[in-house]
Amino acid sequence: MEVATGPRPEDKRARTSYIPNRESERREIKNMFQQGLHFVGDWHTHPERIAHPSSIDEHTITDCAHKSSHELNGFVLVVVGTGALPGCLSVSIHLRPDKARHGKKPNSFIARLRSKSCELIGRTIQSH
Image 1 (cartoon, rainbow, N blue to C red):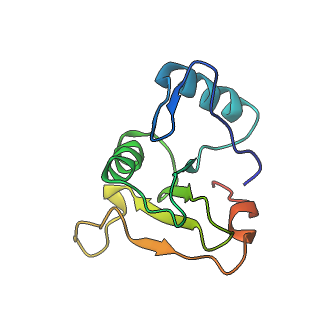
Image 2: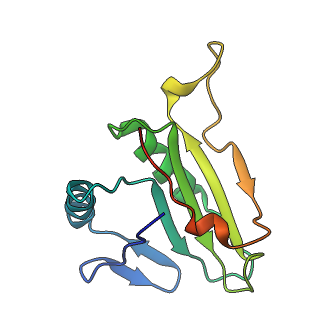
Image 3: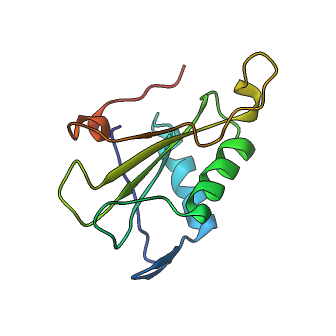
């Protein structure tokens, strides 16, 4: 990953909620794409020591992976808690429905990884 964006000034933020301005978000993704960068997922914080994605988080990123036009197998969701790294991280992968194997419907939430180092956040992900 090369860039982590947001929040933007027009987003609505509170301690326990965040509502992005979708038009600004789409414009930002388009501008980054014109610079050769691809949207690979979403990140945000939670006010808990060890982060767990909410059902809203899982629905939003899964919906985004399903509706977006891209060549990726899916999107990554990173939620950062208030505890010490790396234990406060929740990292999950949300697949597109057309990436199912053997005719089975994929689980949108297929993995929650606890990183042993913070390198996961810094690795470059390239789209082909």
